[in-house]
Image 1 (spheres, rainbow, N blue to C red):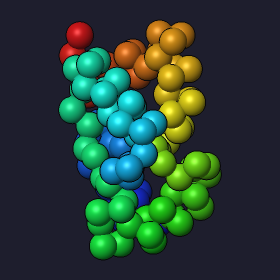
Image 2 (cartoon, one colour):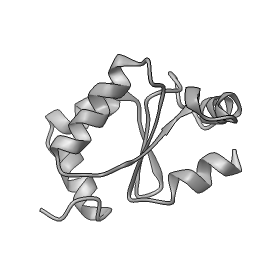
Image 3 (tube, one colour):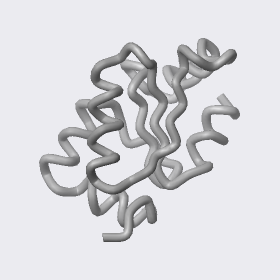
Image 4 (cartoon, rainbow, N blue to C red):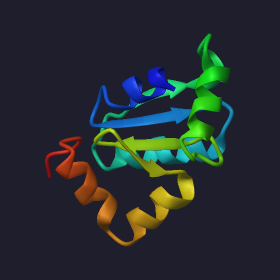
Length: 102
């Protein structure tokens, strides 16, 4: 769990994903389109990915991917991020965390 917390706080925006997850791809694309360059950690391509997936579940991430952190804080999964985007607050969260500047 410490590794997940450390990775989640290394950049302004961090997304834990799996390479085969279509919703993970959608969330990454959304962040790129908003001008952010999140740190991406693909659990299925990491040697300790299974342990990190269990740690994410322990933090309340269900489903475990995509798990989005902004400013070191867990924001939610795809459903939560899309809701924040639709109500206009995702962009402000990214600005506040200095993941984007406009």
